[in-house]
Image 1: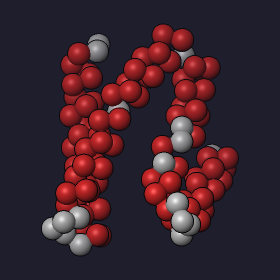
Image 2: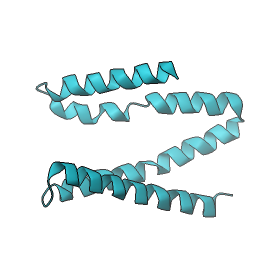
Image 3: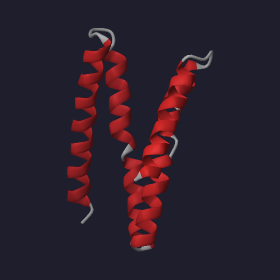
Length: 110
């Protein structure tokens, strides 16, 4: 757990540094580094079967959809809402998209 906390803190610091740099837009790439995916894949792969890991990987590919919903909704909501309200609303959009994804996954993947 401490290892995950340190990684998370380092990621936040890196995002902060990059957001102040000339290449500020790279700060949007850093959260997509598969730090936590690596941890999750290692745990699933070592505690379950390779088939379970492959299923986790396929679900991870579909899990990009809620993130896309988050980005698209934020892009458009910034035109009509202040930043804190837009971010809050986009979290709701992400949660709804994630819930729909999980419901569909559970229906189609026993």
